[in-house]
Image 1 (cartoon, rainbow, N blue to C red):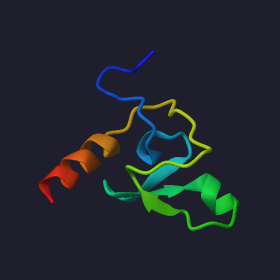
Image 2 (spheres, one colour; image 1 turned 90 degrees about the vertical axis):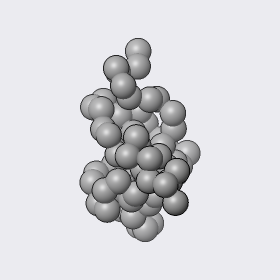
Image 3 (cartoon, helix red, strand yellow; image 1 turned 180 degrees about the vertical axis):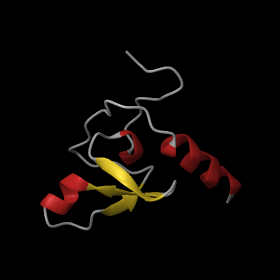
Image 4 (cartoon, rainbow, N blue to C red; image 1 turned 180 degrees about the horizontal axis):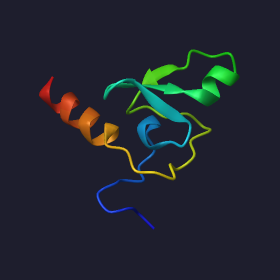
Length: 70
């Protein structure tokens, strides 16, 4: 079930592996760090290992707003 106000579209910003980095445009991915890959990724990107977040986060909404402003 979708949390109120939060989308389950596949974005790094709503993946369970993300942490705040350069809010809201970039996130730090713990999984990519463990895989020896660059852990800094775009909030609106996603990889094949995407896992739905167990907690809501506003970074996707804010990143989408920033993208439309540019």
